Length: 307
Image 1 (cartoon, rainbow, N blue to C red):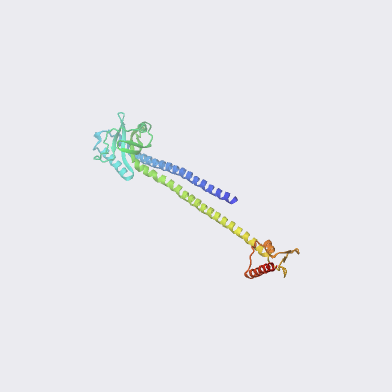
Image 2 (spheres, rainbow, N blue to C red):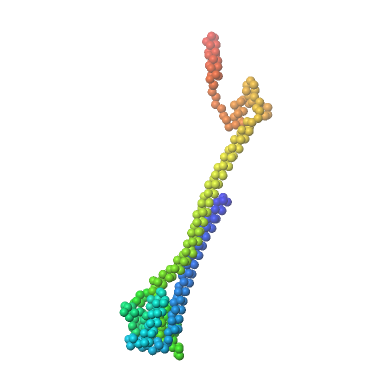
């Protein structure tokens, strides 16, 4: 009973360990995904802030936010700079400058080639502005939003303000768009990392449970074998005792063949053997005695006939 209870405890401990690994894995996966997403958002915002800090605010302020800017040296200079920054940052799809004009959010410059179907010309209105984007023109807070959809697709976007150095007011926003699918793929890396931290201990725990199960089965077989051997040993001991009961010198009557007991009484041979062993007797005649018996019967019959 103690052995079985101990094995049951070991199995339950293994099950609890397995559940603990699963819970730990889920927690770690969530932590890694959250940490990875925060790091990616912080990195995207840091990029936007860095670019916003190096763009000359006076040149941005000189743009009119209309088609009149096309071909001007300032516009071409700013646009060329945006193209260089986009090409240097893998994963960034769009880089652009936006401003508030007549109550609308409009594009000032876009790194996309003018012949691209995704190109936004100076003065084009952006109709999918979020409230956070609109608020950024007044509160000047950089932010990352998304994944959100607009007419170009689904994006994770980071925008940072370009301020007037004298007044501190927001002149424009520089924006970066990262494809939402690429973003999710990056987050999946952290998720798979978390899962790997779960799978390895989980496999280890399962291997331990299987090993403990096999050991338990082997213990049960060994226990049965020990019991069988113990039973055989007991039977052998009984047999040895029976053999010992017949050892030594036995006194037997020379005439009637009775055997003397230790207490001095005399027993018939068959009774003596039966009492000291597990042997019992059945009676019959050997060939010689059979002949003698027949002769005696014939003699009795002859006596009867003569009388």
